[in-house]
View 1 (cartoon, rainbow over the protein chains, first blue to last red):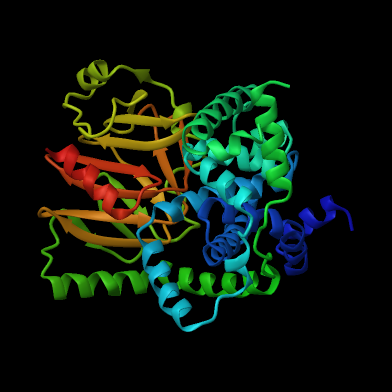
View 2: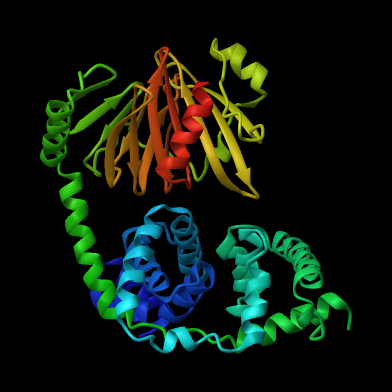
Length: 184
Length: 242
């Protein structure tokens, strides 16, 4: 079955086609959610919500464009809302209570690399839109065209905004993360 | 290799080797969640459930009907905005899809919009001036104030004057509360906004994927929308009312 068949079947509401779409795209959707939310449980919720929304509003998807950037744009918008919403703090509080009673899982050990942790901290000091651009372009390896589609902007805008974001990030690294400067 | 090229290379390396947590299996979990959500949505959108909920609010809270008028079977009127709970209801015929408020015609200045509308446009004092102002006749004067975050809309404030009317269908949830004595209606969930131009020639539908706060005051209906939570919406509402 081709991608186009899967999409056609998904449009008809075929659950098997939807499972295939989730299977194909769950990793980048989860990863982008995690990069924005910095919490595996929140990222899990956000990724699920992304596919729920996608299925509900699939009629808005333009088949002439790639599906992945469309899904990632939904994931990024939901994550941004989630990050700003008060409800998140209640969820975090609930999880805190649960975590206190449980041994730490492998997720908590995932960020052992000081380099990655410092790099991520530096990126997180950027404005949200710049962070999103860097995650899509460098962490999820989207092309300029796909990044433009995910952000719903022109390709030229991606290039100019990316340039500005990199300049900001360079300044942040120089000021607050001098240990990363040796890698430049 | 200059600094920015080195930085790009650093990001690429860091991105490729980033230690993500394992991706959970969303296939079964996602579908399960979807069924639950649909059940919840169906309940929330049920006209009887909404009517019953509103009745309980009215009785228990002693809310004396006034500004938020009668909760009827399948719609609720908040000032100039009629909210339909049935997603299949289209309050206007053959609407032309409008992707964004930014595609509206009638772009103008604040002063000109106020002159045409015949009322002063109060803006939230904590925000910068809006990037765009539009004026439309939708049965009456309507002023749109748009704050853009890059190309995306960060916040929109729509003020509907006497005679104006728009329709909405069908938000996922609707909650009423009082903010400093004024009834405020909070809508969440993707839905559609329908507009009918006064000349009778153009109908529009606009997908709304942000939260919305509605209230009315001094004969005007205010519709504030953006990717904001209820607390932020109330904060902006207070700024507008001052």
